[in-house]
Length: 113
Image 1 (tube, one colour):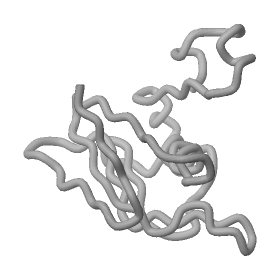
Image 2 (spheres, one colour; image 1 turned 90 degrees about the vertical axis):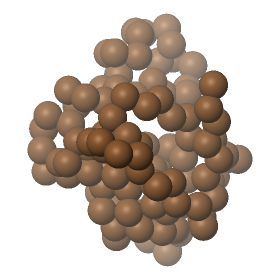
Image 3 (tube, one colour; image 1 turned 30 degrees about the horizontal axis):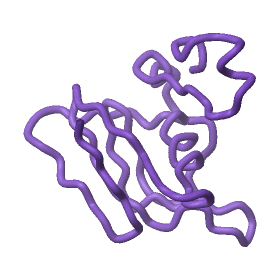
Image 4 (cartoon, one colour; image 1 turned 60 degrees about the vertical axis):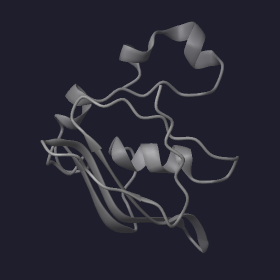
């Protein structure tokens, strides 16, 4: 199992081939609170990645931006070359399994898109 640890200065360089996910200079602010501050990483097609970090590090916010559930304040996010907030099919390639308990009772991960 590969474990990738990201911090605000890490950039994962893509391997050859199509990228499933591109995040470049992502910033997300809620008013004066900066939840994500300029992270960049790339995920090659077919690779499984876990996003790990302490509470308040911006993991959930990063995932929400990648899924198109919220818009980035700055930066570029592409899922298979498309911007998730402008193209509906991003949901066809992604699924989200929230970390709060009631979600586990209601349905499996494929139903949380």
